[in-house]
Image (cartoon, rainbow, N blue to C red; front, side, top):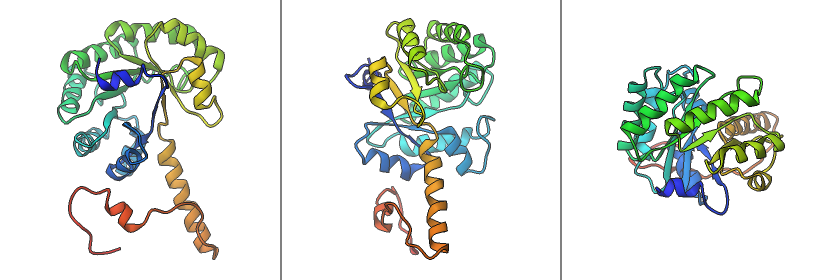
Length: 258
């Protein structure tokens, strides 16, 4: 079992914050997180690209290259693998593993389950040590069909997935039932401010709790609140890292302006 896989079977669930660039990832790691994920929305939006459209493959790989040797474990949100060809997805996973990533998140987008299963199998063949978190969007994009959810997660597990991810699922009873059904396969739930908290999710048997794009969206919200305060003549609220704090998160070079 890899160290990253072991985090899914520790005494407490793996709380995985999601970064969108080098600085945000290093800042999160500086708060004591041993593993950090990326957010596909944040990576794509920061580059002016749409999320979920296979447009941010190069940006995702560049970020993995920048972070793969950092002193924390990196799991990469790869949308649907940036291709419908399982071999291409497997090759992308091999590139991620080569630069130091330890996990990959693959979403089915409610496309054919057998095609997504083929991607999972291709990734495990190309990069056997990479932790594959197979996501189904039955609750995120669909109507929360429990029967379809069970069928899809079973298909992905049989294809070699190390864990399954069901974003949008917040009902405690359904979460507990899915944990029982998975019989030891780690379940990843997306944190929702309106859903169960971290401790409650732990009690339900969830093994991984992702923050998705929440931190990126909160950062944008904080920026808008700060500029609104300044325009209104108020001192901006909330914490603000210093210039030197942020500069210390960089790996190379210095800036001549502030």
